[in-house]
Image (cartoon, rainbow, N blue to C red):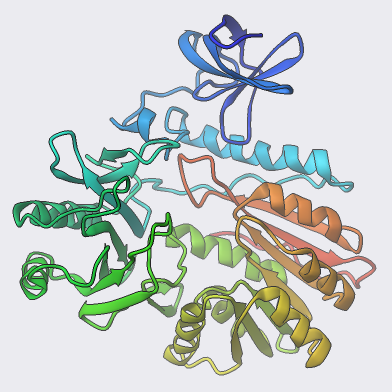
Length: 464
């Protein structure tokens, strides 16, 4: 098989990123934008030893699940890479992705439940990070990076971003353009405005605006703040973030409040949360509530239980669990997030929590081996790389009776479950669609210590 060769193939499955999979002489070809059941004409764009990549030239037989794409920048953006598929079918694809990983890697091969979808899978993101650049006429633009590049595609109407914060971002870039305020150029590393970041409280409608700059000041800052807040009175705070480094990291370490207190609040369930510029907060709070409900009800926490919440962020799920537990310890490496978590506990008058800033591996080791605190239940929600081996071995050593593993990466989840299933029975794996029309899927897994006394009604919960 050679690059630029053309073939007509049948799509036999969809892969981990939602791409179509075909085979020629048992050699796998991955084809973005193709759907299981379709016959397509393709051109080979890359050939490796074990597989190849193709590009669709023509769809000869369409799947019944293919729909007309409702976004003008869909093909170039790559963000909503499943937008050409009927929504309910994307939920099935995501379940199958998780089930395939389970079948290939786990001894127990538990059946993965149906993916919990979203009733209205549009404009769900409460956070947007817009890179700033210039168009071909050297006019300032904001948008999204083209797939696998740093070319900025101007936004028109993003169907997953919040409509109000998108309107604000467009207003800001027009203001900078009209006032001749320079924007950052990655190639030559000069210019002032690097990113416009917005956050909004889904239930409070409070808005935060963060202007990331390659410098110390925005020209006429007071006038900028006045114009912006007069036009958008829901803005509660405006923050200037200093980032002069040559890096792909969006936020620098220094924040200066230009307006307001530097944070907004939002509600999840009946709890209030304070959100700062650097703190992690689920970008889809509607689905986050459902995800946390699954995790907490699965954990079956009692007033006698000590709970460890590892990678706790600003304490969202810790505080949800606290009302059922004897004590909850939250651990997170981001100090600002731990500061927010402590304030969120005070804000909600919750006293049976302790939040610790530090590397999860080191803090967990200290809690278990030095402070001799043994949890009954461990909740983990790690980054995409999953759990480190030391943390897994510490968990296996202390043998908490139940473990809830929330993951944004099914591949590392299953990798870790393979080690944990040596002493745990995997009782449940539930995908949740946190990012509709993208290939990402969040998963909640419930583990119960083997030979543990059966738990009554452990799985008898309903998602309302």
